Amino acid sequence: MSDYSLVILVGRLTRDPELKYAASGGLPYATLSLVVNRQQATEDGSVKKTVSFVEATVWRHQAELCCQMLKKGSTCMVVGSLQQDRWTDKDGTDRSRLKVMADRVQFLDRRVEVPVPASEKTDGEPQGDEGDADKA
Image (tube, rainbow, N blue to C red; front, side, top):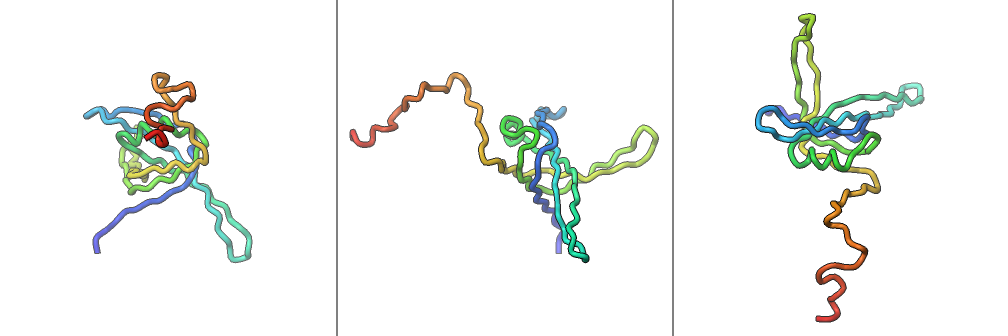
């Protein structure tokens, strides 16, 4: 059987996402910092709460949408795969961390206000053929 990495997380953002551009190619990306809470029953019947902080990277148009639609405290679901970063710090110590490479981000807040450019705003009157169905 071949190996497979699939991660599904639901949590809240710990800070606003920030849009950046890759040095090679200039592709837009954003880092989402999530806090994921978990409750687990223990043997004695009490509830143990654990908190995990996870970073996810989202690319291209989805990164732009995340920066427009999400802010600190927003709830979202991230689906992706694990990636391990490895580096040597300034003291010469080998370091590593796992992060999620997001394939999909689903916004879960009940009401998300979509920013509308001023050029597309109307004064409340229908545009085009809306409301003209009975006239045909």
